[in-house]
Every structure is written in C-alpha cells, then in structure tokens.
Amino acid sequence: MSRELKIEAARAALSLVKDNMKLGIGTGSTADEFVRLLAQEIENGLKITGVPTSIKTKKLCDELGVPLKTLDEMPQLDLVIDGADEVDSDFQLIKGGGGALLREKIVAHASKAMAVIADESKLVKTLGAFPLPIEVNSFGLTATYNAISSITSQLGLSGDIVLRGGEVSPFETDGGHFILDAHFDHISDAITLSKALLEVPGVVEHGLFLGYAKVVFLASPNGVKQMGSL
Ligand code: 5RP
Image 1: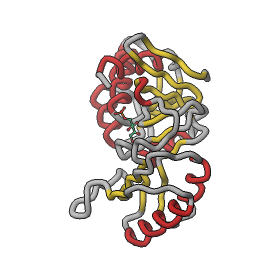
Image 2: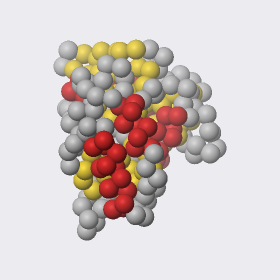
Image 3: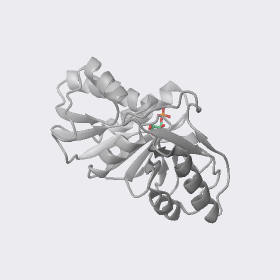
Image 4: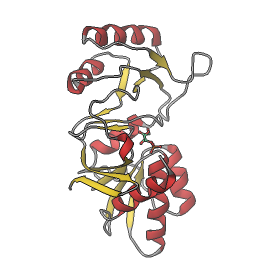
C-alpha cells in the first residue's frame, strides 16, 4: 500500500483521539504514520499518554516526543490504534506481520476499544491468505511445531508452517520468542482455530485478533471508509 494511503488511514483514526486519553500505540508502517501525525498534534497541544506495543514503536515515540508510560504504570487504556495484515467483514483480524502480535494483543486486551488503520487491500472475505503468525516458545520448538501441525490438520487446515527467519537465524520477538508463519490460505473458522492453537503449551499467542476491533479505517484512492464506530 502506498505511504499516502497509510497516512490517510492514520489521519482518520486521529479524530478518535481526545485530550487526556490513555492510548495504546500499534506497530508497523501504518502505525508509524499514526505516530508521526500524533506527534504533530502533541506539538500543537494535544495531551495523551501512550503505551507502545513494541520496542520499535517505543523508539519512534521517544524520538518524536510522544509521552509514554508502560502498561504496568497504566494498565487500563481507552483506545488502541493499530494496523492489521487482514481484516474481514466481522472485524476479525490477522496481525503479527511485524512480529509484535503478543504485545499488540496484550495492549488490545487492556484497551476499552481498538481501531484498525489499513488500506482497502487488507479487507478480505476469508482470513488466511496472509500467513498466520504463531508466536512460540523456543524451548521444544519441534514438539510445538508437530503439535500445531497435528491439531490444525485435524481441523482440515493444510499448508506450510514456516519458522520466520529460518533455522540458522530465526526472527526473535520482543519477548524473545520465535514465530511460525502458517500458510493456511483459507481460515473458515477462526474461533475454533484460535482455541485449538492456545491448547498447545508451546504456543505463546497467535495473530488472530477476534472481538477486539470496534472500528476500521480503510484507505483507498477514493478516500477513507470508516466501518463500525466506538
Ligand atoms: C505488526 C502488525 C502490523 O500492524 C501489521 O503487520 C500491519 O503492518 P503494516 O501497517 O506495515 O502493513 O501486526 O505485528
């Protein structure tokens, strides 16, 4: 998606941000645009306190002067604004393309509402064309991989499940975990899959965000479409 569309989606979401809000701040290239616009508003007098969803987002916020606290200092948030890799018409999401899904989900869970910023290409009929990130503990990786393969094939899902970064230098999340990207292509029952994955002890979290998003801002060359509301 073009940078302009990311900026337009981010700008639309900025209208939800009010003085004194406790704000979760997402991760990814669209969330970065949101941080840049937010920083400008803060310079113009807006007062918010943010909780970043990744080390990367924290760094950008620090550079641009966005005031932050940790989630421990501010455990209940009014709103989180974040990007997504896929969104369906029920506002079910796949997230974690940037590897921040665990902190993103902890922050979303601690927030009264979640707003998603994306371009129209992220809107899908059925989740799954984007590989589902599954964050796993590095201990017992093969056993966890086998358990995920077995449980998902019992659900009728097939496709490669790939260690992000490869075996020689796997990608490590902010929490020091690994990510398995599951190329299921077509996830017809995200709720059942979510429950099944969380039954595998080595699974820390997965990138299905179900029941979190209240509003979605989708940017296209024709403008920004708002779906849902707070
Ligand atoms: C990071 C995420 C991102 O929000 C998601 O990958 C979308 O990123 P982008 O805005 O760069 O397309 O979930 O873990």
